[in-house]
Length: 361
Length: 77
Ligand code: FES
Image 1 (cartoon, chains in turn brown, yellow):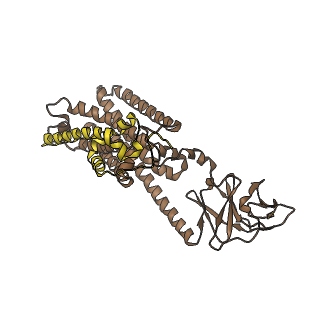
Image 2: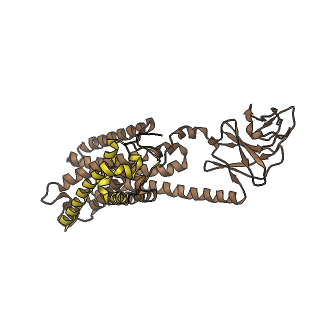
Image 3: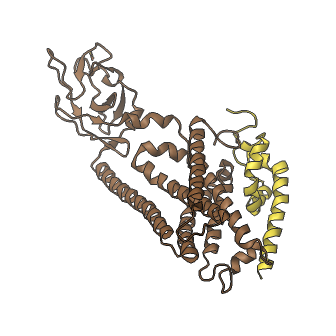
């Protein structure tokens, strides 16, 4: 929000992901058809159109599986965050593949009869129809309608005009669509070729998606509990470590009027009192020089890890305990004895390389 | 039975096309200021959604509610 609408938001990063995903789809469908055209032991090769229908359908399913894995993966590691920003593009692309699958299937299986193709689709599972038994095509159609609604509302215009809660609810239906597709593919494969290959693959994909969601859900619950326990003990949330300027500090005021300087040196974060031993200078406004916190007033120095001045000096200031959780630094407001050694909090700098490409999802 | 449903869907979409086009030409800039002056391709991008969800957008249009007022067309601040 805050900008005039554009048709499609593209930047370098997004374009790369879009090209990669298109190449994958091209390769996948190509290989699928080529392998499928090899004559089997029974001597009969499937129709190329049928192969295309299956290639596009399974490709869309695989991409949807991948899309549904992005959310939990991004929660597990920031490495996957850039994909999160591309999820909408992936989704629309997946819908286009599904549309080809749907269009081909509709024409091929229902386009040549006396009935309207859509009507034929609904009655084909009755005895004597194209696929007697289980209405797996109707399930596919239902999933397709959901994906259609999601694709046509993927633009920010819809997020704004449907309101965020409605938009979110609509797009949560993707899980319903995924469930429908799992049954659609498994039942369809069982009905048409009595093979267990597709049902098995679909089951694996489904278990992967469900397992990842379960895992992150449990992990988040654990984190929440830990954070609440910390906050109950009076710990204070400070900031994300990468938001502290390198070799500088942010100053955290505590309830009792005390101030704490939380310093970052590269990928290490330590906390000491804000008060210099010399003349009470504001240490938090100083910087880190050669691994030592350096007072902005007269240059007295203290080692980050224990608040002790480097030899030959022996001055000591109080240190504080920190914890890094869910990408956030927490501070124990109870000071350690001056000169007490505290291991700094380490964080992974490389994870934040892509953070420039942020976008609300 | 199925034919009736198909016909209803057809009529719904036809109404959607007419109302969507009217909305895109006359209504959108007032209803959502972020769309003021936005290009033709943007309008085409949201057209399919308008055709399917036209009752919602028509309701919005008739209610006169406006959003994104702080944005002025052409001024990408
Ligand atoms: S007050 Fe810190 S060096 Fe003088």
